[in-house]
Image 1 (tube, rainbow, N blue to C red):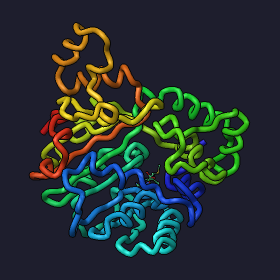
Image 2: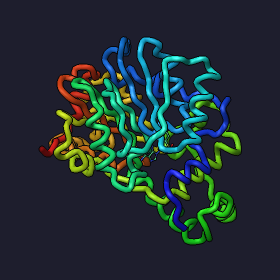
Image 3: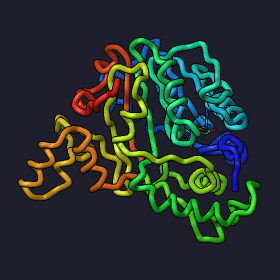
Length: 327
Ligand SMILES: C[S@@+](CC[C@H](N)C(=O)[O-])C[C@H]1O[C@@H](n2cnc3c(N)ncnc32)[C@H](O)[C@@H]1O
């Protein structure tokens, strides 16, 4: 079964084909865990692969002092996102239909979000190059990626679904998923009550399952893959940010700087004896993250990178999470 990635989203716009579905506020609400100052006056912010705009419109609504652009390769998603912004009377956001890395966008941005997109590109590095060249001199790039360890079993289900689905037609793949009794839950990513606390509609569940099992391109990664992905690209620093697991979504804190241990995690907290804790502490940052991912087997993870002095725009925790950058 082969379908173009974008055709998949034309059939199943993500995360919601419904114009009046609830906005997803969680990214806006959690910005203070990443940015030292969340007054974004005059910032230009891009959501690359914004889908149907549930996250982006929520962000634009919370930050009227900034201007937002959503880009997506799926024409239907862009139309839905535009209607969503109108529905919520949010005017500081515009949407552009186009595909990375071919899209010609004559703008540079202070913050680029790219959540759940790069791993669906046939050439993630080409997409990443496009993203980094659209960063302003002090710009920040925030990525959410599928994690290879926690996604192993889903990847096997995906392979089985695709093996047994006859065509790329909209209905057949979904029917195979349902016949196999497969249904993805957002609790896999640490959202036990969905993104908004409301149950997903049937159409949203279909979109979630299509994204999870019918996607022709999915390349889950690990922290150690990310420096290679960034090698030679125009960013000045790279850092780990967060992991997503069925048990929670802790922010990585390699320097152990944050007092609130309910939301933050240091890999040494995942082993019990003083000896092992000392050994974890003696590892370099990538190996500490290796210990963390081997222990937690996350389904997703986030990293953040930036140009110039943009690290100063981030909370202290991010300063302690720096990863090596290969020049
Ligand atoms: C899993 S959805 C993520 C949507 C949104 N970022 C979110 O987190 O809710 C992936 C999105 O990436 C878009 N996409 C895939 N390949 C793309 C490309 N080359 N350029 C731009 N958008 C792309 C798809 O159309 C889809 O809307």
